[in-house]
Length: 223
Ligand SMILES: [Zn+2]
Ligand SMILES: [Zn+2]
Image (tube, rainbow, N blue to C red; front, top):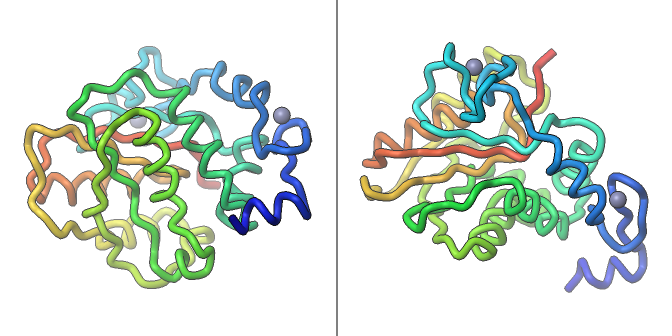
């Protein structure tokens, strides 16, 4: 409701073309969707097939999708959602997943990458949980939130590869036994080193999951 009120006072503009009334208009959404992402989600190497993972990468998940590079429209949309309180962007971001991902089997369960508690307090919302709930509803899939963050505060935004990997290794916990017949689909917003998806997958598998797929809205190359 607050978002609705704010929209009357300061209406949203499309992150792509500036059109008033939405954070991502249909045209700009299709511009993003129509350009397939053809890099390995883990290392950024150009792919020949559509598996999302290159032959050189050993990862614990078996399928991967990424909507696009973290640049231009996608970068502005994610940044306004995460850092400028544009809460309603979760609908646009869930919509991108919905348009981009193939039809999923009925035994897929959506798992949001958990957010550090301090960041949830700061934003006033759990940004990945909002996206995951919206996407799961659109696809009529179940959601599982038993993957938890063990980290209290971090500044991952500025961290280098080594720090990120060390953080990710101990970042997750899972509070229940998972079902070996379920496919767990991890949802993330930005992949950089791939350490988050790797260790989140390992945590799910350590708790009984057999099959984990991953998807991210964007991928960013570390400088
Ligand atoms: Zn637009
Ligand atoms: Zn790779």
